[in-house]
Length: 237
Length: 294
Image (tube, rainbow over all chains, first blue to last red; front, side, top):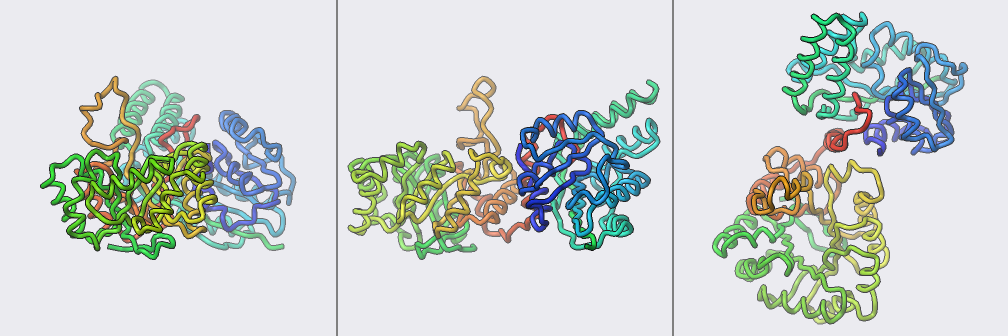
């Protein structure tokens, strides 16, 4: 699986070569693959999900510069000031406000003076975007099951303030995707996330939510909506 | 229509090249109308081959009428001197013209063919002699094979002035060497070699014969094409924005009008939109586990 152009575009103007890097929220290792490709000295891919950790190992595990770490991003085993470059590629939308604040604090703790931060995420979707109906079901199931939203789309200005409050100096914003293509594979992944959350509820709630997730995903099909942006920050020496 | 310099040929090609294989599916009167239609949009670069049914014959009358307005690319699948020379004469005769502006090695596929065409008694020697005689102006190459082979050809053939190869979002989304046609584009640009894009409108392979017989396909393309005006525009703008000199129109006459319109209205595509198009195609091969993110 290749490096997505979103990752390449986000890293293009960052100093990756020879740096110790952290992918916060490794997912399937998109940014990890990009960092390795761009010549990182070491990449810590941190995720709390076993299937993601396994996916990253399968994808990039032969590279001895990679260390996959299963940990909560609010409290990683990394030492203070140990990382030169942090990426949060599509991470923040999976964090509710409380988790976002805690993760931002942790990333600041492990970042060395003079280090860089790249935050790539989705701007809030326009009101008329059909795909919002699927995210609504996903959020409803997640709120009922776990007491927190599955997805929160933060405006870039808000993330600038959050990370700015943890000692990062804003450097630049660029558009990675416009529009964002929500493909059938994305939609089915989101529908499955909604169904999994619904599955943790009692049956009379679970069944209609699961059905609604499937119905909406099929109904929406593939859709392009919204914008994916990249923010870059630096830390004082 | 926008024009771009075709490598070092000193010709300014329109951003759309007319793939004249479309004429093969029309009667002569319809073929004449199609050429008039294409010329009305200002298209000045045509591409033909003897293997396109009787496209050469159908192109002939209007080509002769408007010979000075058309930069004509033709090609041969012959790899040796005598065969290439014979095919060149045949093409000139079938179209009833004196000269071909761009003569191309057609469909290079194997390393051994690169050896053959560059040998002393190879096709390229015949091309060069034909240039001396004034039968051919420029030399090119076409391939939908291994990108590394096309790169090797660019490196090896000093007087190569154009390359024709596939470029579309599906190909751009694949990261392996086997699909690195963007690397071909870069190398061609660095060597001042003109670039002509094919398969810009290919959506994917046709379903297998077991699902739909060849004679039941709705389009005369080798691949299933995109066929809605918005998809055609997106594909055209993408291919043109990637930096090709010119995008070749697809082989089915039903699509040509839409491509003409797209080329006529084309005003670029910004990088975020290009990434969006590539990203949408990248998920055609659904990753496992499926992703929430781009």
